[in-house]
Amino acid sequence: MIYDQILIRYGEISTKGKNRTFFVDKLRRNLKYVLNEYKNIKIRADRDRMYIQLNGEEWENIAGKLQKVFGIQSFSPVVKVSKDIEQVKEQALIIFQKLQASGKTFKVSTKRSDKEYPYDTNELNYLLGSHLLQNIDSLTVDVHHPDLELKVEVRKDAIYLTCEVIKGAGGMPVGSSGKAMLMLSGGIDSPVAGYLSMKRGLKLEAVHFYSPPFTSERSKQKVLDLGKKLAQVSGQFIIHIVPFTEIQQLIQEHVPENYTMTITRRMMLRITEEIRHRQEALAIVTGESLGQVASQTLESMFTINEVTNTPIIRPLVTMDKNDIIDVAREIDTLEISNRPYEDCCTVFTPAQPKTKPKRENAHKYEGYMDFEALIKKAVEGVETIIVNAGDSLEQSEFSDLF
Image (cartoon, rainbow, N blue to C red):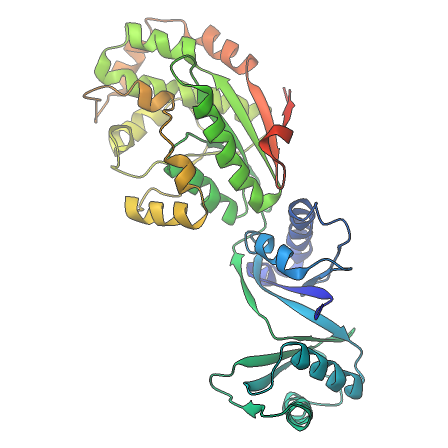
């Protein structure tokens, strides 16, 4: 093993001034969840950097998980060395020998945050570069396009050496911006909306509407699999499964067909609002994109939004469908979303939904039925599933959070 630690560089966290400790702590907790299966590691954080002591774990296995965690600008597997220059030179040589550097080009790049260290960056670059050239055959310098770049960070506690810099996911640590409820269907859009919301620091719980026998267990499983993908970001993801059959049947029987989608969305939003209140969340996230379908015109949003004063966050509102698909492919949810199992929205899609529904008409049609009792019944019948990163879905925990 070449490296003994992973050094993590913060992204936007670095701009947070006096509040930085709060954001760093959120990131550390998220990493603890995501890397829970690696029992030997130790995570240490300070104001400018975070460190994962590997203690025998392979860094390559951990790197794939770190790339999904928001709040990380970049990270590197490193060797921690004392500040004795001879030990630094020797360790740099060991790294290059293990990387089989003979016949390759290289450069040395030093970053010195400890300004009291007796060697400046140029002196360190020269000392380490000269030592490597003297001890490795056919090694040559190329400062523009080297095969290997030795990066040196001189910090107060030690010097850290690496030849790897891996780009992180950026964004803010999940949970640093509060909690919201994601209306999660089995489609392409809502998982992408959830992912982008989490990137801005939101901790999410999902609400999924399930209408058996019109929707199958496979459609429910699709949503759980999407939840598992989102759990890879923060380590855990909670999904509230709402029994929606009775409400949806009543709407189909008593509401004019062109208004069924509008009333259905209003009922979904009212139920999500009630769950949001119970779970102490502060916003609702949807996968709506302006003009994409009939329920996503500005007029529809205006009529549907009336049932709640809670902020509704729509990360995809200005995005093109192809752009949304690209993100879904990147986060590995596209294939799951494309499974041919319909959710309750697609099963009951009217032939000609109203694209400019009126609030007064929605009030009139809702007045035909007693929705209050049915909403309360649906909320009380919620099944809550907790998906943890690294778990198989068979290991997911079913919990009554109400």
